[in-house]
View 1 (tube, rainbow, N blue to C red):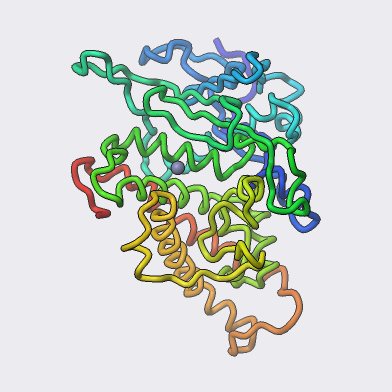
View 2 (cartoon, rainbow, N blue to C red; view 1 turned 30 degrees about the vertical axis):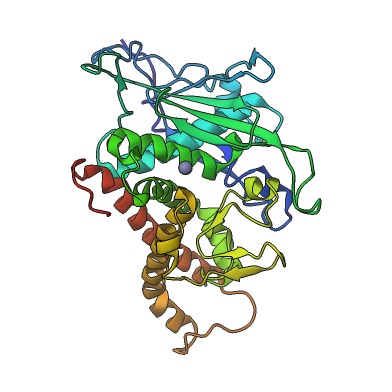
Length: 389
Ligand SMILES: [Zn+2]
């Protein structure tokens, strides 16, 4: 008999970075980079292979119904102690405080972002997501894979990837080699498992592989490019689900999201750490690698004929989807801007009113949620039909 006075909570609150640790070093973004993720309160099955198995509290790792975080670092040949998110001290303080030097926080961060990405997919799909099953040697049978494995410190290199063979995501870490020491400290360690964008991107690869396994067979140049674009789109549009970040960027751009802003950028710390001026990818523009000045992107119809590398080719679709989002957003806020400007639609110099910031952020968030749902629903399409190419 359950003697508890309270119902089971809906959510578990966990602190983490909204983007990555580099934004906590900038005075402009330090206040918005630490957020609290609200993830599903999990009580995993004792035996994940049994349908009617009893449930148990979330295990250290964390290990739940969907994920199993295994923190073995082959570079130093050691396991890091798994974080126990049911520790009363951690429950009372929304998990560990963000820290680059604490491996237990790294485990908490990957868990929080991965569970947030899973929740967004399930909202769009209307059903639980399933990981791709494991093909046995004979190829005649498939083995159910209840949990995706995540290795936060799997290798010492500037890389992170989903391995369909291992049914796992492997995150690397590496020493920074920035183009200029003003961008980041040369030689400082960069952990890909601390980047919201990289975690959401890799998780999307794993979810998409579970939905449609054939989309990883490169039968034409669009297939792998689509996988990359899909993963970037989910990572980008998840930025719009963080209210404080959204309001901050709306305020800074006075609601014009075509200007340079964090919402259209992906993996800032990774980008600068591998020697670029700015983020790894950007949906609305990019920093000129010679001058270091940000420039809006100018779409070229030739790109589709000439760019074949999957990430770069995928960026063409990402930019098109982001432009569609901007059109929806601009349409939705046109009346608000008319009301705020006495009909001219042209905002005066200076900051915009906090009420207007709130309303513009609400419309941006709604428009972004439509895009997120549209892409999450992609899994509902029959796997034999390729609607996108
Ligand atoms: Zn990828």
